[in-house]
Length: 320
Image (cartoon, rainbow, N blue to C red; front, side, top):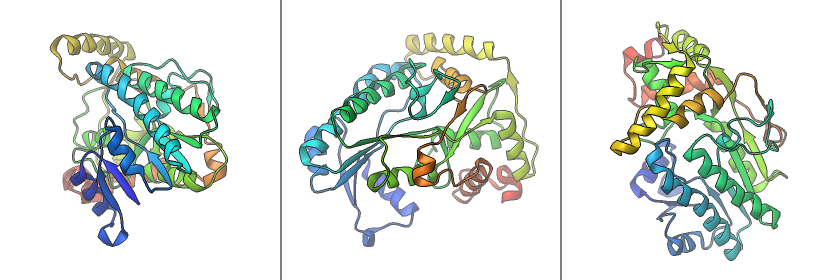
């Protein structure tokens, strides 16, 4: 197996976290998504590729970079795969390409949305590249995960979704919009679909949405597993809508990242809308997911965060 990465040290640490080392014969090769020749060399001699790299940012100042790199890298990887004769490309996208939902039921065949900001717009543009390749006969499979949680996050500061749990346990989430939901999907289920799609499955699109969980229910569960009182402070959604729009204006003026953005608010309010149902087919039929209940996923995540030192004994409560 070969890993093409920008940060070799981070990749090595991630492999070690999963108990993988030199004996597992995993090559770590440095390659940037903008360096076509490095990508061509790195993809030489492999059978298939899982493309998971992208710029993920809800900062409006990163809009131009995402608009260029996210669809551009998908085009480059698919083109190189065809040139080198790779058997399959598994491209990991996001459930965000369906946000806001175009229908009351969303599955892998639902039309894409118009997006809710620069990040989702860039992923929708990338999705159009992938679908055009499939239409032309390329062996491309796209996986669309929801909000990914689970143990063993290789990011030193934790990913955004993991950070929500950490901050909740530390009492650092000031306010959330009333009625907000988070589509929680276990990273192990996402991994099972990605790995399975390399060899099995007969579809070009797999939605792995997770379960839409109201933030009120999530906070109650965190309190139950830690045996602590964890307060959820919320406010009317219109307050957040206005704050997001104002923050985007300030971000463009100051060139700084804001805690709240227009797109982050829209993703919270529309990303797992209460009136929408989300279907696992065909991922469920082909790969037997979901194999993890969201409550177990949250418990496993908090347990790992405590063991890894991201939260204190006090934060973890009974789990510690």
